[in-house]
Image (cartoon, rainbow, N blue to C red):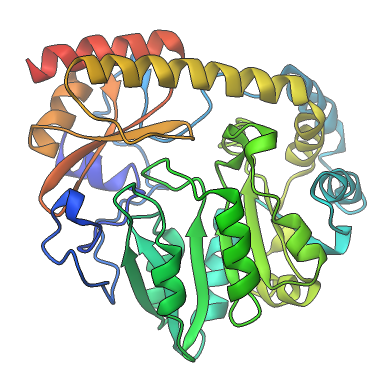
Length: 385
């Protein structure tokens, strides 16, 4: 693949910054970085004409099983409403979310995916300068945008288990901190913060500074294992949760997401987006059906868990240590130059991501169907020799 192909058609989701942990041998392992030192790839770029035909599309954390049949049916029916603006229909989905999360409909704001919400938060909390606290390495979309808008990003090294170091983040709170940003499950590591620790952290920090939780992959956790942070919002805590339908619901190309927070916070964020007006009626009606289709969500979660476990086991048998993941992707160190490894995998029809942290090359592979993961493992064996 050409340099253009890697840098212009897929956005790298890792925070390429010094300071993760001694385990990754970062050159500045003991000190947090004050800037986002990342390689960014425009995820909305037009695909290059030389894109190889892929046997396994494992680079974008998509749901390989597609949308629910119930969502497809609702989408087709809603096409007849395409001449109308979306208005009252949002109440149906907000009501379902509010009942599930224990919040009021006024605590919910819909959007086309969660990317708009990340950009809104970046613009709002970077206004006038100040600091955003986070951890390295994590999903950097909000961080990169906030830095461009004038914020200072302070990224705390992760723990040896690749988790957010909440204790150190709390210790770094200063009057100029505008927001704490946490991705859970985290991208690209796939790790989670234990729910009890996360709730305790939010209860202590949110009264001082907003805590922004990017929960794009939360649906890959079993319902009983998920942090119940909606109750903090219901109590009036300044916690902001963002969710997307792009992952377990399979809406990456349909675009639907939402934020949960205090009404005044959502009002502040709304001024930076087109908000609900940007969601199509077809996507919305499909989203309502998908949200209520628990059986399909369970099916996708089960298939993801099986394929992820198979791949982790196969890699372990080859002597590669995969960071334990709770999402639909895995990150593990490789023993080849990232570009070389990536090119060889793509040349054999296996699309993956590579990145480098502190001199250590990594592969981040999305979890596809079982057939795709078998193809990935077989090709991996050939490439690494």
